Amino acid sequence: MYMVSKFRIVTLVILMGWIGTSCEKPVVEKPKDLVSKDKMIDMLTDIHISESMYQTRRYTSQDMRKITEADLYYSVLKKYEVADSTFERSLIYYSSLPKEYERIYSRVLNKLNEMEQEINNQKQQPVDINVR
Figure: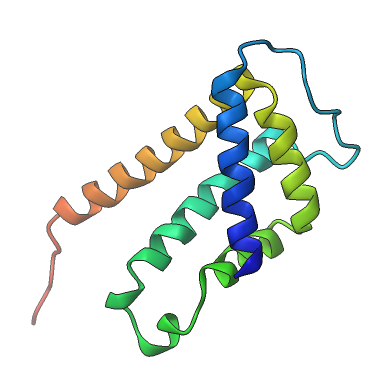
């Protein structure tokens, strides 16, 4: 739970810095273990999906209710084989480049919207049940 709180604080600080700066010159040195942009986009997408799952957990099974937000966050890091410190440094670096960070988040939002559209389209398709 501490990591998630730390993550939220870091994210808030990053967003405040992003709003307050308009230059593209990095304020933060590029980490040697920087997560690629494409991987960061995939990770942020999965993190948002995980957060959504956590918020709606009251409608799920008892086992799902035992899972914490931190568990979901760490499962994303594990899926992509990225240490939390590496992810944090990469997130801070990208957010120090406001235009780049905006492009990254634009792609994250596009992916989430595409997923939502796909789910909505599946719901509207009639199910053909062949009862014989």
